[in-house]
Length: 337
Image 1 (tube, rainbow, N blue to C red):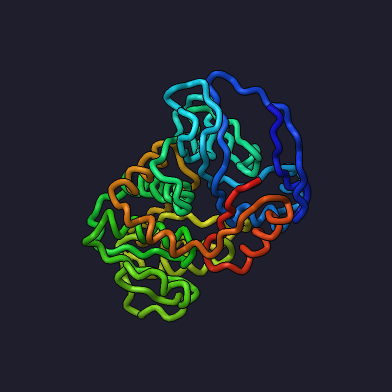
Image 2: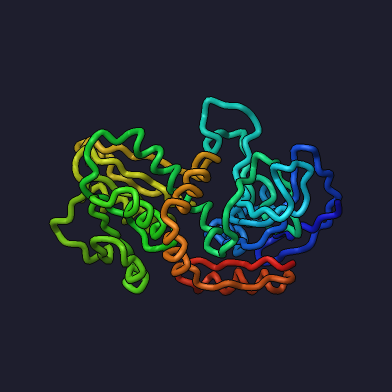
């Protein structure tokens, strides 16, 4: 099969690469329908990564958040026309580690080509069937990241979850807060962000504060940091200052640079700092089951779609990445190439 991959060869320069791909018995072909642009994709596209990293990674097809439709399969269990979510994390060996933490695993749009392709050849084990192809189903990847974090949180938590603070006002923070609201209806959910206009979208939480206007007596049991970037330093500092003793601080935000952490207060309070990254197939299954149980989730997720850009060629791809830089939440590419 002749396939076309759209590869970033240098910042803001996407080119076509024609590839002759074999399709093995354990593989299917998926035609992408909706692809979502992530901050990680933007860092590559805009060249906001270390030059050494860019030289090692590029050329690369971007995007790790996507849903599509099976257009070729030899397996009756994966029928043509079936809607699927494509899993970006590819386990290459059996390991004692969860696949998203196994250093031998590959990840679409980072250590191997992502979903910006005319068609995507996938192992059957790297797709999951979904009951809908609604645009907001593309958020399954971000939801799986949340479930990965909650999996670790629940393994360590030994006390009541009376109140939880979610730091950040972006898409990940929104989805984290929404899932917490559904799973822990009796827990106070507090969101702390930087932009009041974005915090206004969080209609389902108990309290919302701009980070430099939090009450002096603010306290909570646990915290989820969804900020990332250099802003994560001030967020983590405030968390350590205001969280209750023996609380768990789940770190989800990615920062390219080292930041300072007040380890003295971490020790004095007996805090647990828990790192979280990406997700596993089990986390995707939990996300799909969550939507099945709480179908109104898709309505909430629709509110954080800032733009849907129909993509037919490279010019449209560049336009989508440009538009995304000024959007408050998610930019989705309707993939019509």
